[in-house]
Figure 1 (cartoon, rainbow, N blue to C red):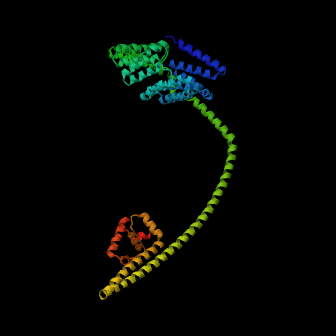
Figure 2: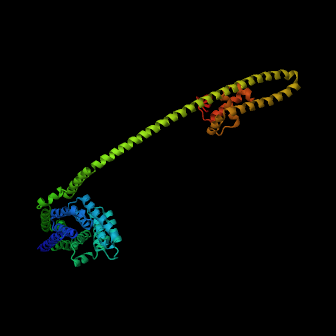
Figure 3: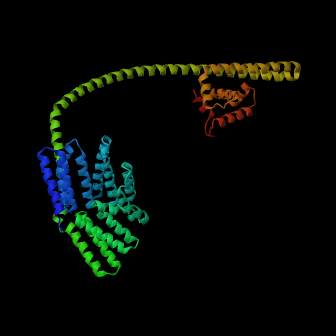
Length: 487
């Protein structure tokens, strides 16, 4: 079959490229180069297709109109996909999608191109067997498109995905009418659709129909000079069908044809195509060199300004640090003076408190001694003067109560913060508990506390046990030491 149409197309775009370049029309020049790359791709000359794109990539990046750059990214995505370099392929397709999204915000007329970009990303996800992502992007194609018309290309890929997922009823529904539309349009995508129609028919054991569609795919490849990379696979599928029918001679012939075409695309032309795996990203190298040159020039231009700026900054920092050091020194001196005064005041207050508590304790002990003497006298009068004993004993009780109240008032005045802290930590303490705590803090023993409070020694012990329980003290914890820590 003659390859004149493809050669004529390449020649047409090559002349256009030269013409627009001579006229300074960069955008149309780049568009022509992209079309030339597409022709080379369809003819299976993948290395040439790459070279054309990489040569014009720096030019596309320089201009403000990024539409040609979009097309370059899309073609690079397709070309990387040929050799299953999946990450690079998906990267370039998504870069093209980013540009399309920006342009559709500026001009709704560009929506059709945006839909096409979603479509290209979906196809790459199919190639990577990421069918969930592919379906999401296909759904987005319909969301992006505002025409309300059927998107035959999108439905074709839906059908392809569902064939791969073995959901043949869904695949049949989406593929219905697609091939007829593409054949009427003379569109090269009919190659893939015919192939997947063959896959569908083969899967549901409609072998005769499968032969028909596989052969349609082959005829479209040859007549339209497109999708050449798919030809070895289609030939292999036909060979497998013949094998199932036990027509081994035909199966062998088609397998040989498949191998021959595969070698033709990927081995015989290896001098051209193997370099694809070792492609030097000349665009990136050029950019890197230019960036290094710009960086060197920028450094030379800014060197003096940076030196002056650093000198000024150094002077400011020195002044600032000197000021901070002086202020810090003054603050430290002031804080030391305040801390010293506070310590003197605290020591003075502590000394005064200790003296007053000692006086209070001494007075209490004297009172206890006198009370003991009075109590002994009352015992002497109990038998000799019963009537007088009763009167004096009542007066003794009232006097004893008054003595404790006076003592407690003085202790509270002297040790107000002690009660405040005690109640803050243990609010469940009763007034009686507080009395016991005050006497324990002043180091009264159980017998002295018994006399002062007018209760038995056993009651004093029970009160101390109750207080320890409320304070959650362990057996080894000393109540007196614990209370002395509370200021």
